[in-house]
Image (cartoon, rainbow, N blue to C red; front, side, top):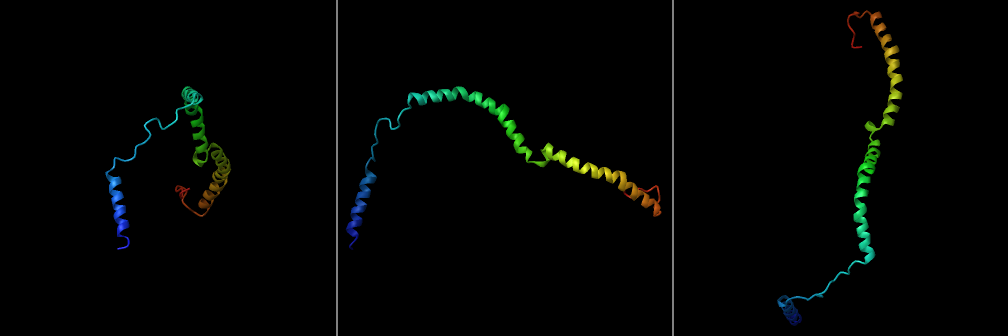
Length: 119
């Protein structure tokens, strides 16, 4: 009972606001216009944007792609060369020294010479 008058007043005010047309805003422009220097800057950007886009397309993007792919070992020519330099001597030693010894041992152990024994 102590709060009923408060709620009646609150509901009456809510009804009045609901049935009112709402607030009226300032009828003029609410955003400031651009200064002459800002308009000149926009025109400069419009003139130079195609040039910058051409530079980005022909130089920057290919360079970026090359740099990003360089982390990929499969596409990095330096890593490929390093791996080739490390594996070629091992493969050469295997084919020129180890495999002939394995074949000789296979013949010595009595394997038929017509079978390659998987080597």
